[in-house]
Figure (cartoon, rainbow, N blue to C red):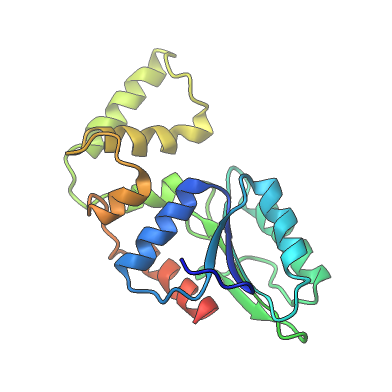
Amino acid sequence: MKSHHHNNLLVEGKDDQHVIWALCKKHSIDETFRVVDCEGVENLLQELSIRLKLPNAKIGVLIDADTNPHHRWNECKNILIHQGFTTPDDLPANGFVASNSENKTVGVWMMPNNDTAGMLEDFLAVLIPKGDQLLPIVLTTLDHIEERNLNIYRPEHKSKAVIHTWLAWQENPGTPMGQSITKRYLTTDNEICRRLIEWLTVLFN
């Protein structure tokens, strides 16, 4: 993305960054904002507080719900209220976009779908094409591993194991998540992806 000093999309890590770049390329979204890898959720929230103090700031937040969507939204909401934004009690299904009296605009999208627990990998798992014959085998394999208590990953990270195992079984094993969109292993024409693209477009264009 081209650098725009006031227009920034804050993300938790490099995977999020590359997924957004791939989605923007796929859907021909104008390069009017910079995707900033904040290297973790705590840094992201801190950056949000700092960047919203800049004049004419336009800031997007792409953040994982993790295990507690309500808590995560409240973390964002408290920062926004302090900066003069009016926020709803619950994060809207299509993401949040609003402006304040100082001509600053902010948007929040919480992975995977602004409502349920999860993360980037849960969003990407939904992009696996319908009828894919490998996904059921991936899920059965991981279930079998868990039944035997052989899994080292934490239960809340199962979606990471799902998407990375599935990608390991594609034509180019181990393709990074962003490239999996570019290579069209993953589809981008389902409802949740359309909602994310619309949120980006409303926020930055």
